[in-house]
Image (cartoon, rainbow, N blue to C red):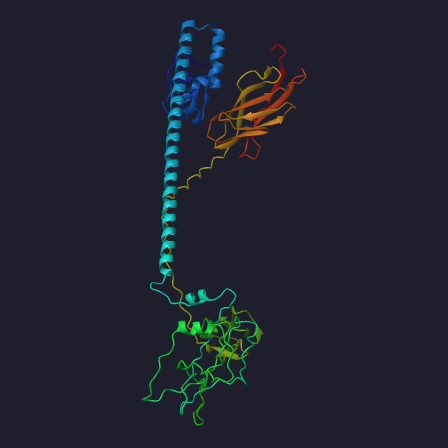
Length: 534
């Protein structure tokens, strides 16, 4: 008979956690997760998972443990607790919850203020960076524009024909003079005259707006030494004369001399005739010898190893001939095709030496022969030995230890056990969920994965869940359960709003995965019904 603890006390760990001291007596629990700790909420102590001990049993989390709540409810049904003690427990729990909520609220408020402050700081940094980048870019572009304008302006004054052009009448077209420079001509200078018959001027009867164009300038000889040289007219004078109103020529007047600007036309150089030299070999030079390409055998260098195990033998004895040939096309031993590596037994039949041949065909078709000779040894008369008596010592008996009996390898046994934490007939109102906990235990001799599954399930929505919140509609697996380890799987059935009053049946079973499904527990039947009184 087990000794139940007093749940009225509130230690920092679950009061139902302890170790078995002697014959069902409860001892103090180990203060850290251990396989020796047991849960004493039932008549039989139940082993616990180490994770359950750390998160529920060894801290104040046991107040939310379903096993503790079920045991306390059962004990309160038998004994009425002191109202003052219950009120004190409720007040302490309420105060702890309020303090925890206040701490969480203060932490959340501080984090929100910190995030808001850092957000404004980041926005300010981004704004300042944008202003700096934009200002630097604008300054750089302005400096480039100013530099381009200054560099494009050439210092100094430029003389143009703008002034004479502005003096022209609006109806008179602008005239340009093309001056052609010529090279000097040998010989005496000759004056050129204007021939009206060959270069007639346009009719001037329509007015004075028709311009006159001078004739092409003839090549002007260089001035003779000692002769006075007149300075050439400026560009402004030439433009003014060209844009002036032409006057009708007088037939009786002398021809107007052509302006001589004494400019030289550079003589164009003749186009050079490029002659591409070609190398012509000498007639007497000997031809250069070209290297000859030597083909490399595609199969590598041929290797032939051919020998006999014995060099000399007596008549009737046998020896073994070995060969190992590589990188050849074919191998023949005694004119019989063989593999590249092999052996053959040969025996001496006569008194003469025996020779054995090996033929190889190289990749280029060449044939090579190899010979191994085994010499025959003439038999000699061997005198028969005189038999002598050999003393046979009698063996002394010695003790021989017996062989140790082989230790049989223990056979691995797989087994699982499934137990419901409460009555399997449960009920709840429509639209609510009914829950029932099941304890799955590994009763085998090795670590195993235990799966709790439905063998039969009705139409109402149902789930199997672990305590950490993971759920499944078909089965739930507890991974790597140690020896005598127990896990909790919770059945949850939701009753629809339009459900009938007929009860629904759900059957559960625990299965050992490492046994391939051979080791199973007994099937537990659960009846779920509608509670119309709620």
